Image (cartoon, rainbow, N blue to C red):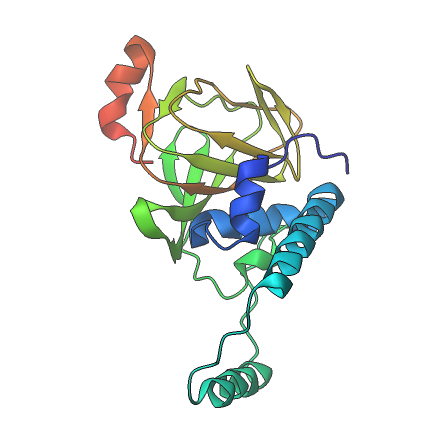
Length: 211
């Protein structure tokens, strides 16, 4: 697998130091499952962070902190998290324990599947499945979107995105993803805000689009 598109350095930094919201963290973690390069980058960032922590003065733990930590470890050791509903090859381990809804139609050739993962600022995680050759409307975003390819591929003005590739988009990006003709495409998405469709056709369709 040759992965060409990765999270930005800022996104990986935020992921490593815990400042990235849970929704985007899930998508980044799913990308890390298949990306050797980004896993190496994360290990380097964590090593730097660990070095800084070693230089900080010692701080006394709160009363009972050790007992609480051991209780959590005992609970997790005896509890097996449910596996994600693997109804297609490539479902990431990062979705383990998530509740997945049923696939529902949202447009020609495209279906949407919700999850129960919701972060601050309206971030949510969902799956999109589009049939071969499908073309999404030309659009931009009112917020931020992270899209990870789990199956298939799509292409647009910014290049081709295959399995393992991650795309970050916001209001500065305008694109029209088109699924390649050799098979369906399934994506894992973390997004806040909504899609803003462009052009005359987009303005006509906008009232019916709820993403």
